[in-house]
Image 1 (cartoon, rainbow, N blue to C red):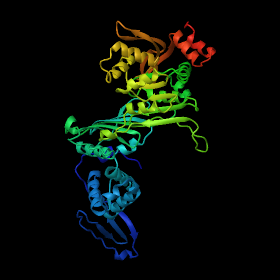
Image 2: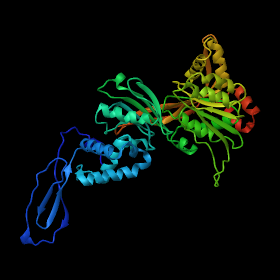
Image 3: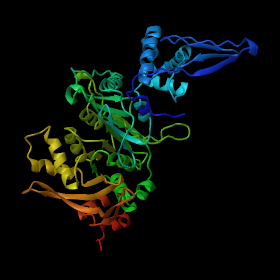
Image 4: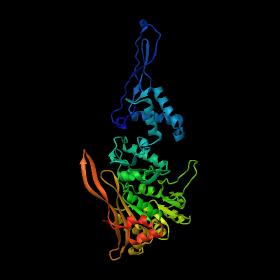
Length: 494
């Protein structure tokens, strides 16, 4: 039987109740019935004899009462070694046995469910545990101990009914999560970013910063690598077949691309699928920060790798000498014979090495945060400036525009759907204004936005705006794209 933490965490005063349960029938005759009653004392079992039925009273407790009693018992009796994940089943059985021995129960909750929830509170992450395992959640944003927002992979964000019991409870759970990453989270380190397993990133702010009445502020990003097909992208109107094919063809034939958008816009998911089309006999190296999202290795029925893919992930440590950065991996990558390189996201000075690689014969795919295609190239130039701040802006712009001829901007609209809003070719730099000159190839136009039955419905369409430039046409032709395939991208738009 399912239940909600919302009911368990009501702040009522502790209650105790007895519920009589028949344990066994007595062989005594009706004439020998004797009614007995025992006064209830905390920690004692209440026995009541009523003739041929022997009854035992059960003690109803609130969840927080039962949690404190169980924690105290388990710690005193078994110690901390029982809290390891490989002893999960053993610990749950011991919790159930403790409840049985003391006749404890929670109203409306089965013994098994109560044991599961007690275990999550004691050894895992409270009500967050099942949420972290779900495939349909992208983010969990904890604004305060009693204010939690869920960002689903599809649809609109919503508030979660369940929450922590107090600011201290929230702090304890988040501290436990970060402890698994061997990170200290207290007044000495109030701003911490860590990882739970390989696919969950936790960014936490201590009560010292957000206030004791709030407890913590946390953003949890859950990476669930999943294969979305070309057909699904097209059916969901993330792109058209024409756009998808163009991006694949240009990538395979040596045209570097940058995908831009806000967090959650779908840029990494889409880029990963574009990479899945890379020829198996050519070497692709991906570089990611801390968490691996790309799953591009292909295997045959015998488990043997059939493509040439290497996945790199950065390594973070409190010891600077042990850290492996994006820039370190990109530099190393260039010595490992890559045919194509993917830098999952550019946020810092690794942008310099990425544009250098793209300008020296390597095909590079990457993502960055920008508010539109026109903001992509100034953003990349600014990142390069972190390493070489004395380089003129126009020089940096000329580098990044040469490096990444194609820019793709993605956005998640108010109806929860993601779209490629614009695909553009960069054709030069306006030196006087220090701006990149872009040529829109395709654009998604929003025609209407309505609210139907409380839901936002957006209607839009993809429009082809301009053909590719002669320079890009000739470059793709030189790299092996057949003329008949290029023709549909080169023809003037009518």
